[in-house]
Length: 322
Image 1 (cartoon, rainbow, N blue to C red):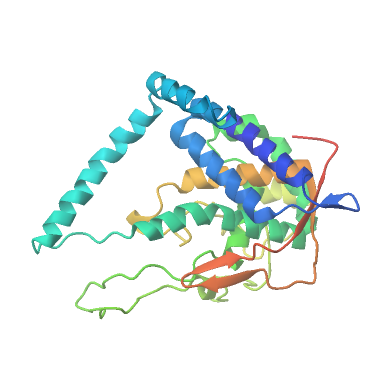
Image 2: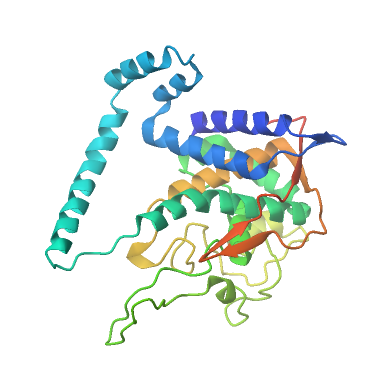
């Protein structure tokens, strides 16, 4: 994570400081910046930093250096050895299906969309909510500074509990999926071909049967009561339903990551990465919306809810860095 943070900070600075400047605030293109951060972090996680040097070399010599690094380091061998059995299984299933056997259905495009989109959609919505609720930023900074990166790394991304709660409240009101994939019901109920059986997180997360003040944003809704007593009790922030503490990567009461044994196994990595990006921006930049009166910041396409890429956020470097 320390190396990922170093690269993320460099990407943020490059995008933000090259954006248009007005009244001391830069206006970068948020969507491309977050996409690059996530893609870069994923590549480092999958292939290691040693191959990253190839990207900054002159084009004439990069192939030679790339071949040398590939022979010297074993990152690609690890990936190959991990994926090869899965590829062989998929090919075997394809042949069995041709012979009339029933085989599991897979939707690789949906998995690809989920893996690539969830990170930056969540980060975009949280940044929008930080700009809409700036009163949370000072106490979030104190919480991040109190824990520090050392504790964050040691906990494998579980630290920053106030930021974790803020992220979850943002996701409650801005779910990134409108529906889940169809499934067959047990107990004799048949779902016709072409029909979908779906859950509706957006409606569920606004149901007063399950949530107190469901339409109101409460960034610390999911904070543990003990933490609230020690940190937040002297502030103006309220927890509308004490005792409903829950982590952002929880699946028992939350369908952001899927349900049961089919829940996303990469949710811990995704949570740590999004927290890292948000903490870097919160600690190193002041932020606000270019147009606070703009109420709609997302649109629906099929089963996904996307933030508008055109929503401008203004950022100004702070004098104190973290």
